[in-house]
Length: 119
Image (cartoon, rainbow, N blue to C red; front, side):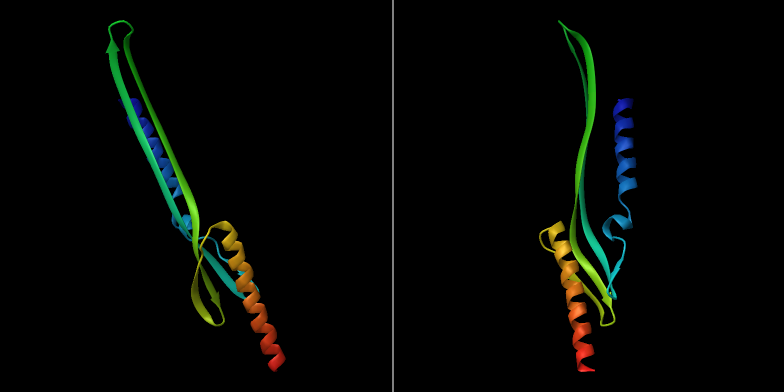
Protein backbone atom coordinates (compact mmCIF):
# COMPACT_ATOMS: atom_id res chain seq x y z
CA UNK A 1 0.00 0.00 0.00
CA UNK A 2 2.97 2.36 0.60
CA UNK A 3 3.92 1.97 -3.07
CA UNK A 4 0.46 3.15 -4.17
CA UNK A 5 0.65 6.15 -1.85
CA UNK A 6 4.06 7.00 -3.30
CA UNK A 7 2.75 6.72 -6.89
CA UNK A 8 -0.27 8.85 -6.05
CA UNK A 9 1.90 11.48 -4.36
CA UNK A 10 4.25 11.64 -7.34
CA UNK A 11 1.31 12.00 -9.77
CA UNK A 12 -0.12 14.90 -7.75
CA UNK A 13 3.29 16.61 -7.61
CA UNK A 14 3.63 16.44 -11.39
CA UNK A 15 0.13 17.81 -11.95
CA UNK A 16 0.81 20.70 -9.58
CA UNK A 17 4.08 21.39 -11.41
CA UNK A 18 2.38 21.48 -14.81
CA UNK A 19 -0.68 23.52 -13.87
CA UNK A 20 0.00 27.18 -13.26
CA UNK A 21 -1.24 30.47 -14.69
CA UNK A 22 1.27 30.30 -17.55
CA UNK A 23 -0.36 27.04 -18.64
CA UNK A 24 -3.74 28.68 -19.35
CA UNK A 25 -2.63 32.25 -20.10
CA UNK A 26 0.25 32.16 -22.58
CA UNK A 27 3.16 34.52 -23.01
CA UNK A 28 2.21 37.77 -24.80
CA UNK A 29 3.31 38.14 -28.42
CA UNK A 30 3.62 41.61 -29.98
CA UNK A 31 3.11 41.94 -33.73
CA UNK A 32 2.55 45.18 -35.68
CA UNK A 33 1.37 47.11 -32.61
CA UNK A 34 -0.94 44.30 -31.44
CA UNK A 35 -0.25 42.37 -28.26
CA UNK A 36 -1.71 38.87 -28.52
CA UNK A 37 -2.20 36.78 -25.38
CA UNK A 38 -3.29 33.17 -25.97
CA UNK A 39 -5.81 31.52 -23.63
CA UNK A 40 -5.71 27.74 -23.37
CA UNK A 41 -8.00 25.04 -21.98
CA UNK A 42 -6.18 22.30 -20.08
CA UNK A 43 -7.67 18.92 -19.22
CA UNK A 44 -6.23 15.86 -17.56
CA UNK A 45 -7.10 12.65 -15.79
CA UNK A 46 -5.24 9.99 -13.90
CA UNK A 47 -5.75 6.88 -11.87
CA UNK A 48 -3.88 4.85 -9.29
CA UNK A 49 -4.62 1.29 -8.23
CA UNK A 50 -3.19 -1.66 -6.37
CA UNK A 51 -4.15 -5.13 -5.32
CA UNK A 52 -2.89 -8.25 -3.65
CA UNK A 53 -4.07 -11.76 -3.33
CA UNK A 54 -3.22 -15.38 -2.76
CA UNK A 55 -3.68 -18.35 -5.08
CA UNK A 56 -3.32 -21.78 -3.46
CA UNK A 57 -1.33 -23.04 -6.44
CA UNK A 58 0.81 -19.99 -7.08
CA UNK A 59 1.20 -18.28 -3.71
CA UNK A 60 0.80 -14.64 -2.76
CA UNK A 61 1.17 -11.69 -5.11
CA UNK A 62 0.72 -7.96 -5.21
CA UNK A 63 0.80 -5.25 -7.85
CA UNK A 64 0.08 -1.62 -8.46
CA UNK A 65 0.19 1.00 -11.11
CA UNK A 66 -0.63 4.52 -12.16
CA UNK A 67 -1.56 6.14 -15.43
CA UNK A 68 -2.71 9.44 -16.78
CA UNK A 69 -3.19 11.65 -19.74
CA UNK A 70 -3.94 15.21 -20.62
CA UNK A 71 -4.47 17.70 -23.36
CA UNK A 72 -4.08 21.37 -24.14
CA UNK A 73 -6.36 23.24 -26.53
CA UNK A 74 -6.21 26.91 -27.56
CA UNK A 75 -9.63 28.51 -26.97
CA UNK A 76 -9.23 32.29 -27.34
CA UNK A 77 -6.83 35.15 -27.82
CA UNK A 78 -6.81 38.49 -26.04
CA UNK A 79 -5.92 41.25 -28.49
CA UNK A 80 -4.62 44.53 -27.05
CA UNK A 81 -3.96 47.47 -29.38
CA UNK A 82 -4.56 51.22 -29.72
CA UNK A 83 -8.28 50.55 -30.31
CA UNK A 84 -8.70 48.75 -26.98
CA UNK A 85 -8.91 45.18 -25.72
CA UNK A 86 -10.99 42.37 -27.18
CA UNK A 87 -11.21 38.60 -26.97
CA UNK A 88 -11.20 36.58 -30.18
CA UNK A 89 -12.61 33.06 -29.90
CA UNK A 90 -10.63 30.26 -31.54
CA UNK A 91 -12.41 27.25 -32.97
CA UNK A 92 -10.58 24.22 -34.24
CA UNK A 93 -7.18 24.18 -32.54
CA UNK A 94 -3.65 25.08 -33.48
CA UNK A 95 -4.21 25.86 -37.16
CA UNK A 96 -6.91 28.33 -36.12
CA UNK A 97 -4.51 30.04 -33.72
CA UNK A 98 -2.13 30.76 -36.59
CA UNK A 99 -5.04 31.89 -38.76
CA UNK A 100 -6.21 34.23 -35.98
CA UNK A 101 -2.72 35.76 -35.65
CA UNK A 102 -2.52 36.33 -39.41
CA UNK A 103 -6.06 37.75 -39.46
CA UNK A 104 -5.36 40.14 -36.58
CA UNK A 105 -2.09 41.36 -38.11
CA UNK A 106 -3.85 41.70 -41.47
CA UNK A 107 -6.60 43.85 -39.94
CA UNK A 108 -4.03 46.05 -38.22
CA UNK A 109 -2.00 46.45 -41.41
CA UNK A 110 -5.14 47.27 -43.44
CA UNK A 111 -6.26 49.82 -40.86
CA UNK A 112 -2.77 51.33 -40.79
CA UNK A 113 -2.54 51.66 -44.58
CA UNK A 114 -6.13 52.95 -44.74
CA UNK A 115 -5.38 55.69 -42.23
CA UNK A 116 -2.18 56.71 -44.05
CA UNK A 117 -4.15 56.99 -47.34
CA UNK A 118 -6.70 59.24 -45.66
CA UNK A 119 -3.94 61.60 -44.46
